[in-house]
Amino acid sequence: MDFIHITFIDVIDILVVALSMYYLYKLTKGTHAASILSGILLIYLLWVVVRVLNMELLSAILGHIIGVGVIALIVVFQPEIRKFLQMIGTRSRRHRRNSFLGRLFDLGDDQPDDLAYIAPIVKACIDMSSTKTGALIVIQRRTDLRFIAETGILVDAAISASLLKNIFFKNSPLHDGAVIIDKGRIEAAKCVLPSTESPVPVSFGMRHRAALGVSEATDALVVVVSEETGAISLAQEGKIRCGIPADKLKDEILRQMEIDQ
Image: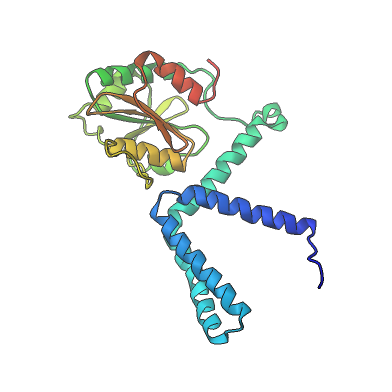
């Protein structure tokens, strides 16, 4: 019996497949896509067994199903594929920024060095929290949010606490939706965010679900003010922290953005 010869390329091949499966599992965990993926894997394993047993007719049928299924996969898993590609792009940009060449040639964020724009955001959120005015503010980091900004109304204005409070005022035509902050300015308002497909507590409203959804798809930092309780929450990388004290909000935003105060 011949021994199995494993080369360095085989090891790389196995590692790449393992990493791909791991990230695919992370993206589909807790969603309906996980059940669909399990069914697809079972069909593929059955096809492999059938080919090994030389069952030609069943093998041909399953082969055609799998061949056509590739197109179906692209349609069914379109959100997950987009999130997977965005995850890779975000991580690669983060690595470039932290590398020696990134620091040398300033390949980092385009965020302004002056973080004075954070102060009016914090003040507006604290004031809206006290009056239980619902708000959803998305602070762009490295991921381009133009595809989200285009779903709303272009504002392109300097940030001020008064302007943010006026936007989210209950009778304002722009209050229903999210505000996009880019490079220290209000880029757009009344923007539609993708809602999360992950299981969330029943107490979460549409703002919290939308905040989780955009934080799963991008590296943006999302500030949520609850209309029911006035509680302030922060969402990033698919996780959300609720009930952040007003006096800790600014420090928490700066810490989440990985920028020194």
